[in-house]
Length: 65
Image (cartoon, rainbow, N blue to C red; front, side, top):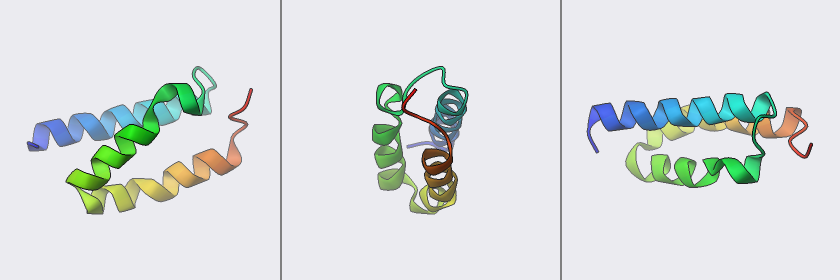
């Protein structure tokens, strides 16, 4: 995966996290889990950087509305 594709994947994940926070889409419907798994396979360090933010988002926002 090129650097450009990696940056695009990171941007997509962050955008989906914002959509989930703003309740535009549900966690399940967003498909963010698959993207996180793809990121883990490609760049472990970036995955470890985003994971705490992801966990905090899941724990603190009402994602079931």
